[in-house]
Amino acid sequence: MKKYNYEYFASCPSGLEDLLAKEIADLGAKTTVVVRGGVQFEGPHEVALKAILHSRLASRIFKFLFQFEVSNENDYYLQATDIKWKSLMDLEHTFRLTTIFGDLPFERDEFRNSQFANLKLKDAIVDYFRHHEGIRPSVEKDYPDVSFLARIDRGQAKPYLATIMYDLCGDSLNQRGYRVAKIEAPVKENVAAGILKLVNWTPETEDFIDGMCGSGTFVIEAALIAGGIAPSYLKVEKYLFGSGQKQWTFLNYPWLTKDEELKTQFKAMLKEISESTANGIEKLRQMKGRIAGNDISEMSLISARENLKKAKLDHVIELSHVDARILNPNKNKTLFLCNPPYGERLEHGEDEKLKALYKGLGDHWKHNYKGHRAALFTGNLPMLKVVGLKTSKKHILFNGDIECRVAEYNLY
Ligand SMILES: C[S@@+](CC[C@H](N)C(=O)[O-])C[C@H]1O[C@@H](n2cnc3c(N)ncnc32)[C@H](O)[C@@H]1O
Image 1: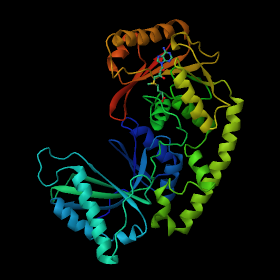
Image 2: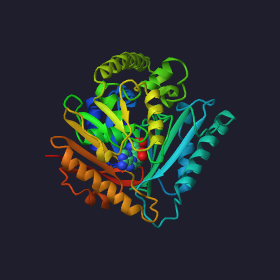
Image 3: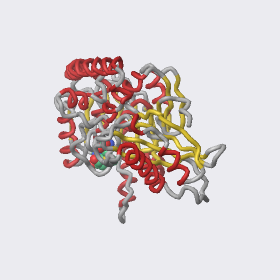
Image 4: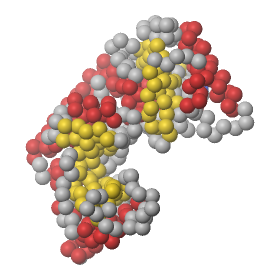
């Protein structure tokens, strides 16, 4: 049983890997290696903590624990009972286990599906504790004390390679804590932050308007970037005021609890985030009017208002209620972004309405946004042609399972 080549793995929506590698390198990682869906990295342990607290793009951070080759499900179970689980979790800890399959041969009898592999590993953990301690730990889906990820890939000496990791996060990192109100198709928080980075939005030189803000994800992420506020700020506050013990599983791992230096570094990081949040919100007050949201639906605006309030940004971001096809840009140079409906559940006649929406936006930008920039984020790829404007850049990005495009327009 060997250890992985790299100590940590940060996962992210596919399309953001290069930006995530840069973000993690900027946080102090010595080595970063981009793979599909994330970045492997190496560095002092505090970099993993910094990534949990400061990464705007990562979905989760994992620490590699073990890697071993196996022939089949039974071999997997037997080898997994040899792992000293007691050194990774206490008996009174509840745990969660997730198994994913990498690129495996389609025809295979030895590993049927990820749920069954998950069950095998769970049995191995439970049987290990029963055998050594006479009692078994409990499984907990929502707020476990300890969370493991197992991944099965193709092996070399044996047909399969199993990798076991600690999930250091617990709640995924895109759950910033401000989304109290939902609408039908919100974009994930790290996808929104990633898009702002992909289109290279710089708050110092451009205002930002989300013309179809829905529940407010883009305007909130834009404000956090502009104010230099860590994406974990609400979780940090919750932890410091005593009700956030369950949001980060790493708090229970010997990885942290047995490392006094790391614990001291963690406390210093929390203090720094708490102080810089107050400064960031003050900075944003002075920028009032330069980040704004708009939507045609009153229901969407109600959700956006609730989320802005929870994010403590309701005093700094203005919302308006007009059709994006008549919304004026700010006087300053503006990045005008829209994440229009994709029209997944198209009813009769909806296609024409959607075309009118995308074309209307293109026409409006062409005539009224000269000197500004625009960006569209959509999962409806044929609609991009309907916009009728020449894109300056296009990026492929996955929002969950949906392959989307971010199209950028320089408007002259
Ligand atoms: C896919 S959702 C946006 C989701 C948003 N990015 C979020 O994270 O919550 C599309 C939004 O576009 C709005 N919308 C549709 N047509 C519009 C129009 N003509 N002008 C302004 N908003 C519009 C809808 O009300 C909806 O809130």
